[in-house]
Length: 301
Image (cartoon, rainbow, N blue to C red; front, side, top):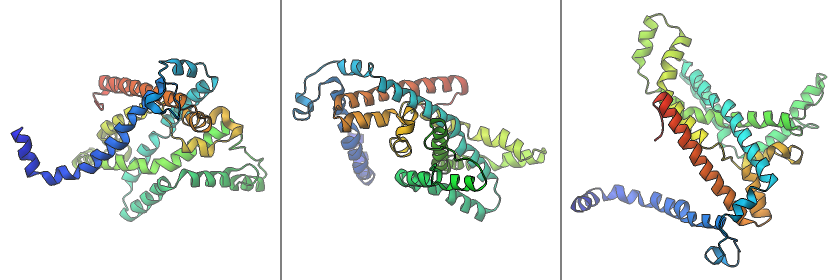
């Protein structure tokens, strides 16, 4: 106890700086956890959380009988898996390419251009997507029409919509994701490249045998975290880009929770779905971390 008092007295400025972050997590992260109990209650808005009657797992039984839930769950897994296949490698490839650029000015300009989409709201991106890929008046289909190509239903055909969804996601996130990998690249010993060059290794061999192994731990950690989000999916992207004609693929758990919770007022169902996502996500991340530790000796735990 005496040591604690000594540290508090000596470094009180540092502890004072922790007050706001700790308060943020307590109020906005840990405090709302009490609301999870709604998933086990017949929640009534006028009775409140504490006065609403307990119903056990009845809400979960109700969810698992809903066809709309299984459709949203399937689409969530499908879109997240496709994002993992196409979006996850994109920042790695970009970082490797940027690392090979010798002109500092050109490299900075390229990085700035690649980062910009991350700061654009998904609402604005949705407007851009509709202006560019609309079947009747989109810029892309207008140009295709001028060269005699029939309009492509990027937003109204469910299969074309998937490519539009994935491409938009890569464009929006890939540049920002390179920041982590470029930071990891700075930790690689430059003497390794010099030694490889003396041995006659070209750029590709240096990239394959030095650069990629040098950022392997970063890739594994981010991959484990990404796998832990397989049941989690952002609301804005599928909601803004999706529409009724592609509902079979665009309806995901986040939009399902929005419609069930806010539009129909079934707060217990919405909370139960969120709780289900959290539990399954925890199982995924622990499993992925276990496999990563066994195969690569890298992990997050």
